[in-house]
Image (tube, rainbow, N blue to C red):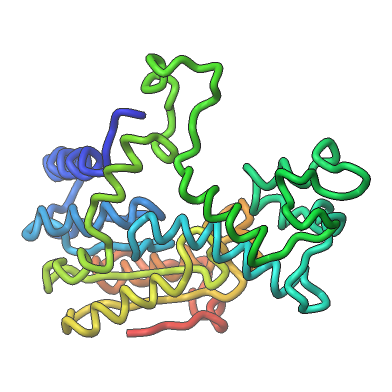
Length: 299
């Protein structure tokens, strides 16, 4: 997988679609391409490459900007916002080393370089070692000490393989797409979804669903996609957002998307939309509308 690029994934999707349409049980006039997260970048491209074949696309947890902007949000902007709004209780721009080191959410944000700063072995007489803290104090200055480390961390993405792995083996050891250098370079060079979405054929219907507490692909991106579709007068598109749900559409805080099964009312909304666009058999087990009183629909 480490040798695959985003273009490879799009081409694989085109090939899979061609195979799918040859199956006797498939109605070639009612094809829907669904993508989640990175898949929301691939799905519109497949629809563009196959204008007479794809009837609908469903984007779940939609990415809008270039991946470099998404990484900046995840690794820089969100941790800084959490630090200022939650940890900086005195609103003086400083974080207590002790509080920051004990805060699990903060630890999950920093993960890499800065986590070394907060470990006890990097403390000397209750102060951070000089090489990590030019002020030689027990506090972390959000703007001058934390922010530069977060920026450095973001710039080092995708994080290098462990030094124990020879470089000649790196392509073999990189078994997941995200984090592989070749994949990352291809995604950076790929046209952002915010541009691509406007090229989707006008007769392809588009559903976008996003959790309002999504920390991987923030809901603001989904709103930008919806706005772009409105600007280009795409005839059939809708955005549904869900409060208190994260990237996997599982209950989450605004600071961290939790892992868990997608909520049934989200699945019901997607199915209901497909009912109206593809003639799916109506669900009788429960009514979608009874579950989505807090969801926001934007047409």
